[in-house]
Image (cartoon, helix red, strand yellow):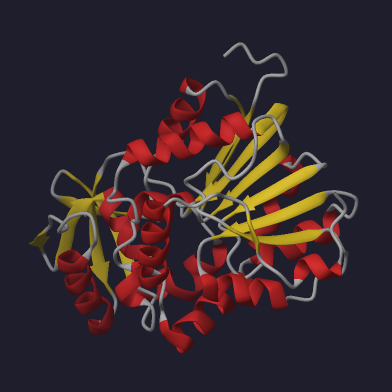
Length: 314
């Protein structure tokens, strides 16, 4: 099938939805209902991160490419230009995001926008060359009751949908290795935002104590705060999401258990976050011999690539 311009203006339902699927679908649309202004801010953020997301391009195998949780189409636009002869499909469950992505001006007639639940098997077995999750798997986890079984099943479905030799590419938040850190605040606004975050964080209330006007807490909880405090308009939604579901090692272990060969596993801190926000608002410390020592900020992002063996023995 060769996509054409007519394909870009309609939604193709890629899954046969049962009554339960339809109920879950409606519930998720309610969850994702950020309001008109919220969606504008959300979409603007996706567009602003295109350069960062383009870092996945070297790992993509051309052919049939699917982005799961395509949002407003920002990544699809990059893929359409970089892989002009490939068939590219974007899957999303949010009607509002689908509408925005369908209106996007893709330069090449190789993109199809489809509605579906990324937790389900939306394509047949051995049918895709590359499957991409950009800032999607943490949402799968967060909106499925913080259940890692659902996340594992999603990745298992991905393995099955990939052709032998096909690749899974994940770009998402990353949990730091467990360590106790101390967080100092450069202004009252950020300090108050932290107190609010500690009470409202979705999976659990953040445990911390004050010590010399610094919050003593786990590094993974510090990372979660840093990933969210910059939000205002979409705060009520973002604070419910856990961005760092796995550490780098845990991600690699999960992929290996499902049969993938891990060919890339790297994490980094997005410079824009560090310069524009973190360095202005907070300081992090470790403590040794009752003395505080400044330390760097945790990484914000992981890129991990798993390849399905060319001879699948499963």
